[in-house]
Length: 367
Image (cartoon, rainbow, N blue to C red):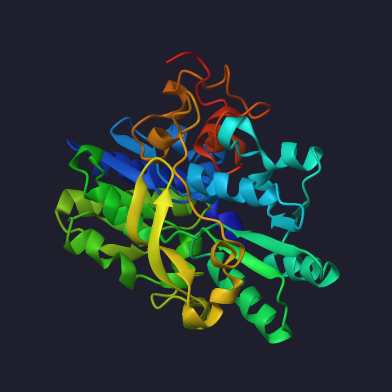
């Protein structure tokens, strides 16, 4: 049995599950994961369905497409309508509804110039091949992807590409966790911390979770045993009244993170306020261009601003992202809103909570 087979071994998983049930005697645990890959892994592995009822799983704002705010969608749709602009984006954003139900996919069908790319570096090639146009890359995602986008901007500067720009919609996870915990109505009792983000930032940014809020938190991998061990560690810390932050994904995540990636990230960007769908503005939870790279900021270079934009009619993604509403309790779930005809981004993205609930048929009956 190799190491990955061991992490999926049913007997080992059963043993940890029994330990969880023992640790849960007389207590409950409402834990939240803030990673779209964890959302899917919990459902796909079956771990979600095996947990005792005293362990409540909340899906949080961990899907990069889902947390992109309505006003940000409106801003890039405005740019897509300009004849001298080419939008370069990852595919997930193509079907996210904007104002009036418009999407990049519809705009593309109507003549807008939109290129789906698989890496931000691909967008540089689009810019180099279209010197008479302005190429705008949509920079969404968390600390996981932001360093690669930063490296792309730095390369654009080195190559002297004056027609390449980024819309910096990146979000930072630790300030969002702080914002969620500052709302007592959330009643979160533990965090399963994102493995990918943690590989970049390490453990230090999470320290306030235990020190300020007394919340246990565990960095977890994505195999069934990873998930179960993280839940067990949270349950044990809660029972013992000794919350702390634990790195249980040491085969990938070092406590110090990735200093080289962070160095590139903070050469190009600096922290700024950011809008989150369903949450609003969270101070210091985003990234804006540093002074040395402002020429690559699409907002400044192309004269576009974020304007107030109304939430999508009937969409409850904001409540889903805060763990207030399970997807199947949304009146539109599996009726007006399906993966084939999504009303909101949580049903669009493969990492969205609504799409995961739908795909794994967790509960399609009316709530």
